Length: 217
Image (cartoon, rainbow, N blue to C red; front, side, top):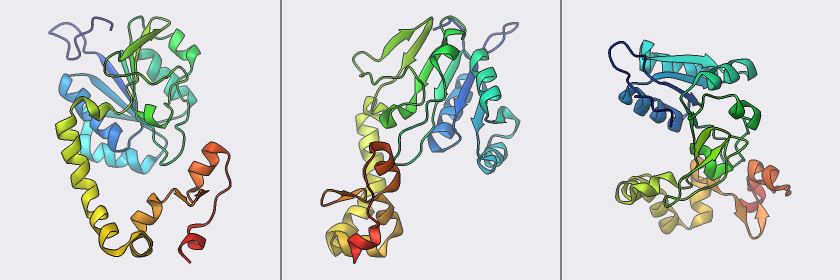
């Protein structure tokens, strides 16, 4: 890292954290960064999400409508960049380029939460908890796949709490009837008998997509 204390000390400025993406992961990343004392900037293209973030965080977080200019300006000023861009079922867009990284502050850190979806930094590649980081130019990348695996007890209970009601529905009704009754389950069906049923997955892999209504008929 840059040797910067996130919260600073009297007479010395706090570090700057930039969070790209104002979804659930982005909000949590911003909350943690705030707790560490960073000056936090949250970027997203969705103004409704930014308004919601403003209401939640107040003036503790600076929200910025993301575009190429604002993104580059924020990244180059940052000590820490957290990529939290997620398009459900699809590859994450590559927003931070190698050229941008080459101009970042020496020792700056980039954390790619979207690595399970391919990552949102051009130089991202999956790493492990055993060897979590690598360097690109003068910056440090942290791109551990399955980051919640660092706290397996907590993450397993959290995942079970979220998924168990759906599992019970599938067990009680069978997958086809459960999917017919629950739109959330229907959105979660990606493939059936070798055919892709979810558009973003088909697009990401260059495969034809079958309408889910055909599968459920």
